[in-house]
Length: 419
Image 1 (cartoon, rainbow, N blue to C red):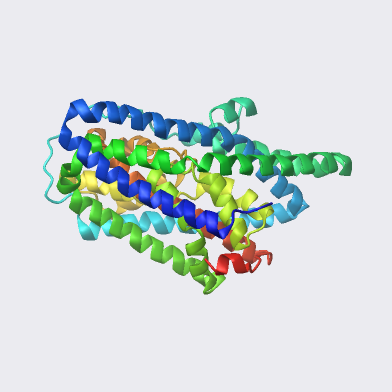
Image 2 (cartoon, rainbow, N blue to C red):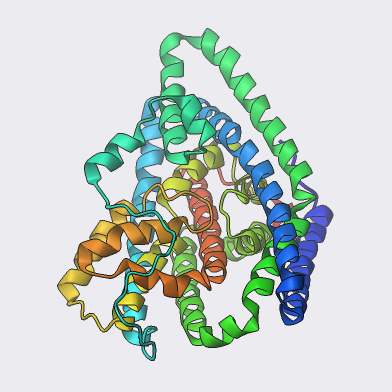
């Protein structure tokens, strides 16, 4: 499968950075001009970003199905699938616990809610009201219809169907494998080629997304919540260092090459605040680093359901922030219990903006935290989500490379080394 050239990848990265900066400058200018200027601009920005995300989501379901079936089929027997899957799921569990604990410790030390005073109220956040139910979660994992799951881009359900489909292939004989595997492989190639086409408009979408948010909120909101944002970003920085250290134990110094190779999808995820928008590009960049398609095609779909490190860190950090704002004391035992519940409820978070907020809203009532506190976060959640998504991309990129190294199939590509 062809990968983008070093020149094209670098040019695309520069275009995204320029679009991000232009979005901030133009958004501030429109905000200063007043509602008559920024409201039409915000609608235009929503159109630009929405079209891009729809184009990408159009690709997600067939790409996940094709890469996962091809990956499992290429791995061969079910024992190998179970070995790789078991190892990488263990990695996901460790990374998730590390993320939750990092958020918990940082929130206790940095006290991000200090200085805020909010009365208990029933403010409407506009988020879905739900309680986490383990039975419902397990039932939700299994799709009633794969077409319904694909229509909703429910990654977790698509993963379950695709894994079972891939495992069933050897049972029906070599003829089916010879027919299906080349077809899914070519389907994955077509989807990645479509991704290249869609990514040409990525800078426009980045400009629209950032411009619309800044035009609506202005610089004032960054000033008001600047300290909170700084503390959250610093906490994510600590998590990046911890995840890099974990990966260094497996990859050695190549982890730094990997981090540079992942720069473009990380920037795209940061700008669009959508993990879905990054998935196809992430597959390409990992292949450029030397991760075979069959590994990334198996690990990444799992990671999009079970390894969203930035989102799960936000769960514990955000919950304690709201508790501190309302002056609610949470004993250590209650905090640990909350982390355990979040470990389950965070699995299968959709790779779309504000999904982490909805999941947090589902957990908070169980620990006496007012859901109205999320109204504090809504105004700056776009900037929080940008950092969460970038962290998710980094964590899944690391996981795919680690799985390839464990299997002894990580290639040493000079193209990646030179970037």
